[in-house]
Image 1 (cartoon, rainbow, N blue to C red):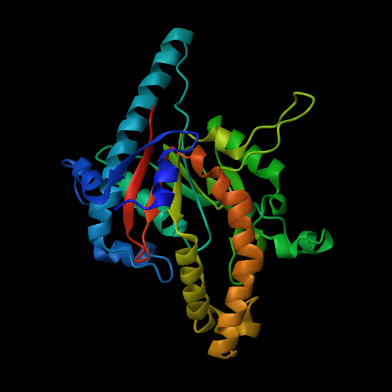
Image 2: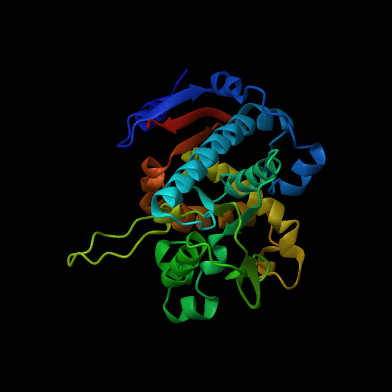
Length: 321
């Protein structure tokens, strides 16, 4: 049975066609399974319950769809070169993955990278997250933005736009900052280098964000303007809160135990304190960001994966062309 929120989603400004789980799975056709249990163990995020059945039913059809879109894009690029009498290298096909904290964006992005890179044509597929484009903690503290970390204003927008422009222009060896979830800060000495991939996956909570229309007509581009296809990972707000709290407990018993962790102060708190802390952080920061900045971008996605309480995708919404 389709809930009211799913019906609302199907009627959003950009109309979508809804596919039930089994209906979507049938679109896999003859796409081969190229992932193993070992692959899933490597790409699965903390507390993510994804299994190979989920990959077969949801991600293989999506991989097939993306393969068709990339091929079509390459043909269009070739036609443009013929018209312009040029023999330029093809530019990367860029896929954006957006959604709430704890919704499963990272796992989705990593699974897609593995699947797409194992097509018969063996394309070069790279993955970046927008965490590296957050402003350093020192800057956020100076600007009074530490409690707004992850909100649109906490990112170095000019830097990410330069990166996206260089990638889409086919530049070689484009660098981007790396982020440490251990220190909860941008790394000063380390960078990631992206060198002319066939496909680039860009993952981040606010990658579909748009700015306010300019009064003088001199608007700057949005990150999403560089995307060829975008995916939004969706779930009920109550489920997202539950997943966030579960992840907080797992981190308390794991990564937070490291004395170098920014959140080491939470390593020895009681279960009651952990629940209160996680709930407070969710309500005062992540829920606000979700409602003000993330959910409003959902209609801009080309495809929405709607998850149930068990983390499994129960509906797929594909934008009508």
